[in-house]
Length: 102
Image (tube, rainbow, N blue to C red; front, top):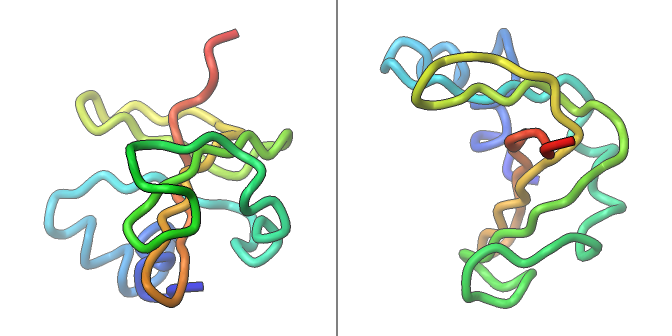
């Protein structure tokens, strides 16, 4: 888990505060990110890179609320069960994603 990248999405952390002060509306994860790791590799590939390779992304529906998606255009917050896993060279971080249309 890339703690610095992950903390940008954890309310109350210094990394979240810095991102907010820079005017960035970051989605907020409300469950321990570590608890979401068992689902890695079970979602949909996002982009052209194979899931798990550095720079790849994966969309996973966790089946439970994992946090609040913040729309970057409007700033509107919505509960979401979806997350985007960002794969790095040696670690990952998970960002709450746009809720599914129901």
